[in-house]
Figure 1 (cartoon, one colour):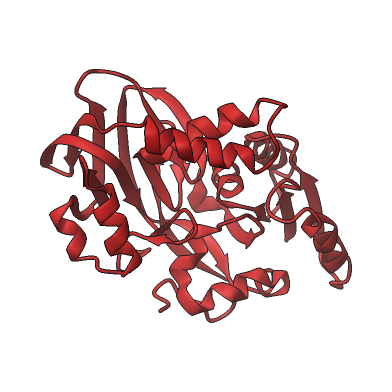
Figure 2 (figure 1 turned 45 degrees about the vertical axis):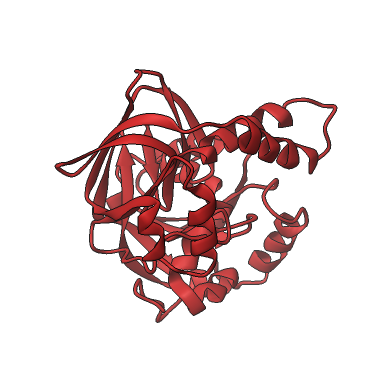
Length: 303
């Protein structure tokens, strides 16, 4: 087996790329290649080229970066059920592996992943690509959109875009009218934030579901009503998941369809990567369609 490491040198700490190379060089008998990303989305191109070049080889791919790197890497495969992928978390939040509870820390040991097991997990599929953790829109996608805009300007430092984007969503972002179908149930109203999760954590710290079953083919959803964002955030901080139901629509679903009632295009945050100008979003959970490499003994229902 060839081990393919897709490494995003811009994720997390700047020295992790060199440290990872040193670790891999010390593992005897490891047949591996390291590929460095050049820009956001380059992971997708790399995967397609590597799969074509090594078409007759058994491959295991390692995402060495954050949630966005993982999402972009997965979108390079024709059929996720035919490949093995691992997530070596090097980003700022790494939300997806928080689903594994106390066992999360073992994912940070690259040796454990190389010697790991493969388990089958769910993922989210849309016409615009796949995600493993969350789809989110509203204030969250507005924040991601403004982050991209401010980062493009050379006059801002590394931290200023985060502050400016946060100020924008707090002062300018408004609830919008949506028509939503969760399975066969129709929901309508003005919502501030919409989150659909295969995982259960968004933004590094916000756990929006009490637990996540990564093998049941269902997603948790939280749709925050107009003027409900602050009460929801306060209750989520206390892990009062029942308390948020007064201010949000909550439940589980296998499929979802979202459109703005005024017909405007929607920007969606895909595991930290922004996808824009889609008028109707349709997503479904693919049950046990992702072969994820985990440290030996780690299970999908870890507490």
